[in-house]
Image (tube, rainbow, N blue to C red; front, side):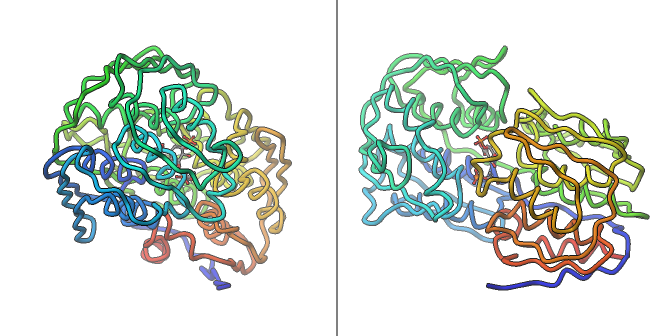
Length: 429
Ligand SMILES: O=C(O)C1=C[C@@H](OP(=O)(O)O)[C@@H](O)[C@H](O)C1
Ligand SMILES: C=C(OP(=O)(O)O)C(=O)O
């Protein structure tokens, strides 16, 4: 396995970059564009490995998808015209592809088998196959459809009224895709609001969906109409440069065209609470997904508490936020984040153990961690564990550490940010 030396000297980060397209929105744009009959165009698409797996799956269903860099043209016969795939739909490392496509396939007319890599095979699927079964979906698989591979026989569905036990946009979205095809009106209730890209994109594709007060209502039998989608930059990718800019002496970094959907901006709230110097300039686009330019400058940081409804608004940023907390004065407590244990890796264990190798003081708890700072990090050899967010956290740790840091298995970073190291190098001074 590849090992990479992360040698950045003691320089600061200065300059501007445009972060790649939003992963969540890119997946959904391909899905809606494939369900809709006709021609959907997408710009700003994230050509990361996870989103490329989503493209592969819909090509296997007979949808014509042409990619030119970050521009996509999707020509689809519509969901009722899809072909039955002759091989498994391979979702790679992507939880979003795996969970959302189950909801899409459940209401289609085809038989298919969904499977991913060894990490996907360990991730819980009952949270999706359970509610879909209540809608009449025919999904079978290992351990009573708890894990992939999962075989889906598409067919008629009925509406559902569902109180979600976990705050998960993947579960919500899978149900919404199925509900769009179901007979009757579905109602989904969330205890904490998760990212709402699916609801917003439904409206862009002409579907009427009501949401507010933690409740989403969708009338079944509505068909999306092909449109153009402009994908903003991914705040979860920007997060690594926000953390680096805040922690590394002498830094000033500008991040352009970053998606600022309020269900995704929890890290900005945390940075403010920690005393970081971040300014936000919103651009006017008239689009349903807000975007803008973020500028971060180095400053002294203090510990904070991160819990409750904030967690789904920054769930994927927690590894790099934990790293930032090692540089803050005082204690940072992260609670209510037990979902981190069922991501690509157990991210609570991965963060505590990997940053512990550099001397960080991180105590893992069942649903989060307690981080004491500031600590001078030293060099060491970190392992990404095949998890892109742990890999990028390690690269930011290398910028902060006094000694040399090496990273085993950096290749997984291409899952969400193929040009990560190029962007990082372009900012080094
Ligand atoms: O819907 C989405 O696009 C995502 C939802 C989140 O997962 P959960 O729904 O499991 O919280 C997040 O961690 C993942 O990276 C992307
Ligand atoms: C958890 C993530 O993605 P997914 O669930 O799609 O694998 C992530 O990108 O951090």
